[in-house]
Image 1 (tube, rainbow, N blue to C red):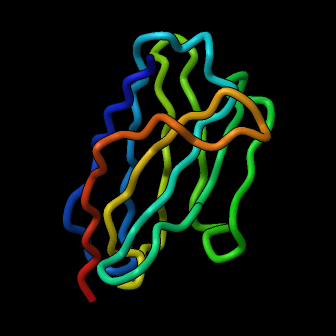
Image 2 (cartoon, one colour; image 1 turned 120 degrees about the vertical axis):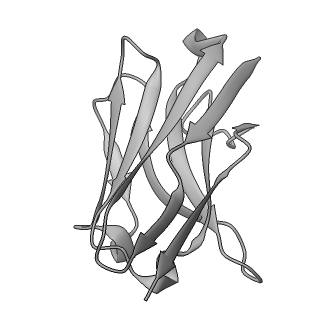
Length: 119
């Protein structure tokens, strides 16, 4: 089992920045990739970015490219999502997730952290 705990959410003004953290524990050797997702009220959960556990590959959706970056700290088993130039439409609950293989579903999820961007 893998446990994921997000932190770093909060209230920020439009144009501001936040850094979200996702700390992994448990059987982390089974992790191939970590991802960040978000879910706004009344909308489906959407993928934002991913990074392989080795940190060698990353991927982003177009609408956050250039504003969000993903990174990881091997020593802390933690993945980060740096979010810059935040917009009101970025308001959502942000989740991190883990999967054991590139073609496998994300089957470990954190509890989520709320990000609210005021305009």
